[in-house]
Length: 505
DNA sequence: TCTGGGGTCCTAGGACCC
DNA sequence: TCTGGGGTCCTAGGACCC
Image (cartoon, rainbow, N blue to C red; front, side):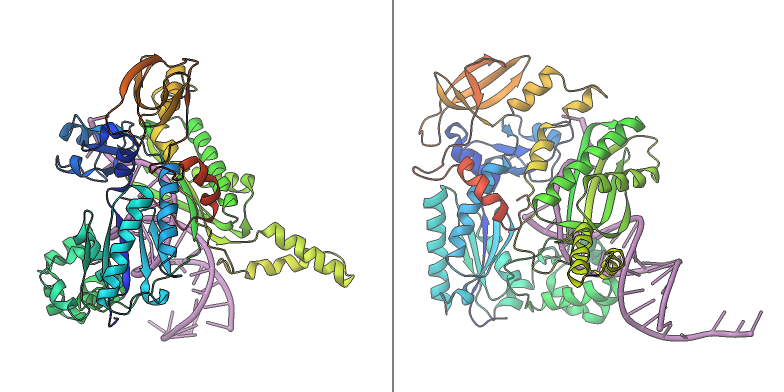
């Protein structure tokens, strides 16, 4: 616990939806919902206008449509959000060397490490200046929480939303927390909340009163002890700038449950290829292959296999995933398949063979085989591992439009499905004559486009085209702020160096 | 039109070793 | 020929977070 409120938590307001509103003038002030548009999609982010109808993140899309039938429904554009996120993270980096991104739209900053703020007044000034810079640079608003610990800073930013700043004076922690629901404490989710409620514990004050022994009895050693500490306002977790990735995974939910064993096997193979592509893209290899299967009834199981050494070989991962699939009964249908690799290293078994061979050669000895045995001693953890985030974006972006294949059983995508993918709602386009616009919707061989740009002050006009109109083509996002950076320009250089990125709420 | 996708951490049991 | 106790690795599942 610090004497001054020098831990800052930034949370962008309704990030995905706000970015879409900033780039599409006709959506400003209107309910906007970003998420998967397939039959099994869920809400990623709802604009504040949409929240007034009761729409919130993680809600099934069908339910959102019933609540807010007139909202704009858009597919997420992760490359675009990542570009904006990069601009925001760059501003945070000017405040301190210690910036811990939690997702595309959220981060902790240690102001003390940046030597910028020694007291409450200074911290508040830094926070307000940051908010102004973010608005000027991205055209979007963010909320700031300032406190002497991560937990309190995060609660403060939540309280500041939208478009505000809240500072909690150190020393006020216990009084601030006491009357609130236990659910505000990080790590207390629905299950733990229920568990505690059945024990008569609903507020943070109840937690303190119950005492550590009782909490440990209810929740177990680790969880109970840490909850008790948090309830007292004790939270010494440091802001950590870079974390090594521990696993890489991809998964797909299908529009329609899969029954055909051959099709299931094919999808597992595809997922294995995608997973390895991501793994290699991040410069990693891994020892443990995990297959995930969600059945028709939503029951979910995993099967895993640990290899003798780390690999990034597509064939090795694919064959392991296929072996694991043989262990799973899929009768009744499969809703989701996933393939992951954990036990990451920044070298591969093959590298070690090569290295062993080279060493043997240097010694003038023969046969590197014996040396390779030592590879088994390799711990799964990576040593140096630069701050390479394991990107996400791509997978989910595809997921939103994908699954189109599901409707047609085992057939390849139809022309209509291909067109749907090409003209995803919300995506930018350019018309040879009419200029920049975005897809409002498509279907029945038509695509509807609204022609407007981020700088416009009035909604643009709407035109409809046949899906294969030669004058119409997909385009990169335009800058939100005049002279700003576009998604296309930022996406490529930023992505590899981006901090750990996850889907923001 | 019921429930995404990408992660992290923790627990618990069995195997295996000393 | 009634019996302990760790430590580590592997596997599976679950809670949680954005």
